[in-house]
Length: 293
Image 1: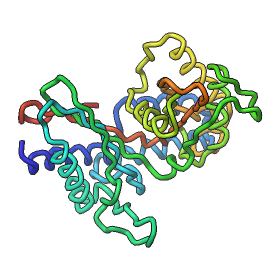
Image 2: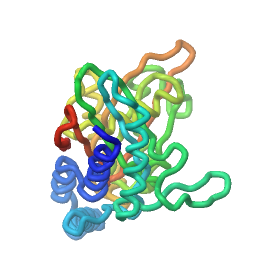
Image 3: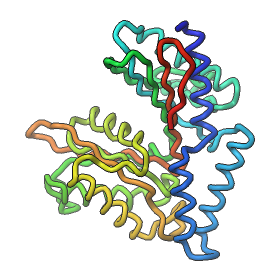
Image 4: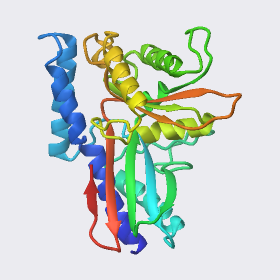
């Protein structure tokens, strides 16, 4: 495929991520409405969110005014040019910004000047991996700044929380991260958690966990049980939608594990707001794109 063909597919991928919330997230929000007290601020907040989601889809407009940082995971076959794919994604971000699917979000960290076209150094942020499949597959996430601000990394043991180097310690720090976030991450949120790794790989893995569908069950039985427990206990904290109180603080918790050095035990949490914007595309042998949820 030519760069221009990739750009067209990637612009459509961005449009889908920016304007259409994944069906599993919409379903989780709809189910949450029924759990809240009638006439409460929590119920009102969730209904407003759902109204916003419907309007965004109808009007082909961004779900949130903060269209976030585009983060992409690109799987490619041997021989494909990662430079071409990187350039196509960067051009797609610029075109999507022109079309108002993205806000011009990229700001020079030294001068404070906006680049004006949505792209910049490290924006979009792209992860590449070669695989045996003869297709290019891209998984895209639009990561909002508000929820990114409440992401956090813990170093175990943590004496303040009585958290040791075990899964009970992991449970304690993950719940603490929810308490620290309160409504500032635009709850209800989804947590991507990485146990282990270093300070860089932990955040990469925690974001990767956010690509998992909400109904996805961890293949590790012990981690699956911990994910379910954290979801239940997180919702018992009473923080609720947008911090207004209520039964719905979290929509999901997803945990991944990396090996670590003996000296370090990091637990890294990436928080995704209710606008859990993710989309995917698969392109085989230059054929028509196949859209992935």
